[in-house]
Image (cartoon, rainbow, N blue to C red; front, side, top):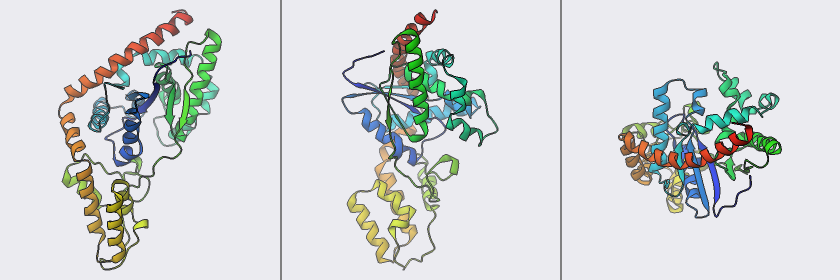
Length: 328
């Protein structure tokens, strides 16, 4: 189905696997919110709480993770009036469309999914939801006539599956679904964790900026460094502490810290304290807002319901189109 709009409709899914860490913020959340503010873009951003059931089976954990993600995006300023920010499970049409799509998705295609092969090797819970994950993802996209879907390399194959489904269904019934364009983000920011590897929950090396000051400082003080003494000059370019600081600091701040490294008489403990203070200064307001939201879940529900209402209006139109041509 072709569609002309004044704004490009961009859709992005947000994992709800826990409290977003510094890597999530710098690599995805803050840049995506920035894109959503551009006047020519209309962002549909959903918290993928149904997807998380493939790996998390505790209801309270899923619910808390979802609230945490919502609080993070709201604290960092997502505009819920301009954009559509919602919880996936609030739009039940998603599951209905996923069933219709599954009847057009060749089993052999799903067998080729890289993500299923990767994830099934890392878990004992190899369930059919994990296998059919790309179909639910396709439903998330096609339900809203999304025109652009930004993805990393790991999700590109899923978008190709989605585009193939559109071709199959539109060939059968006429142009009832919008074929999304893939916006490939192959320049994802590298955010080191406290052990120097890429920051990831699976490595247990994350920095949670929403922790209390005491806990946040403790995690920063745990960043691994070499064993050079206080007096010795140090190389900022090979130090994880400096790399993290450089991602957040101004040019002037970076130059000052780099000079301290090279001059000596400046320990890694000092550098870690600088990083801690910079995070507190830079994200003080967001940390406060996050905790306010997390202590008032009713407000979070109200804000998510605003987006769900807008999403359901569009979802119902799509479902009615699909039902009609498929005989329901």
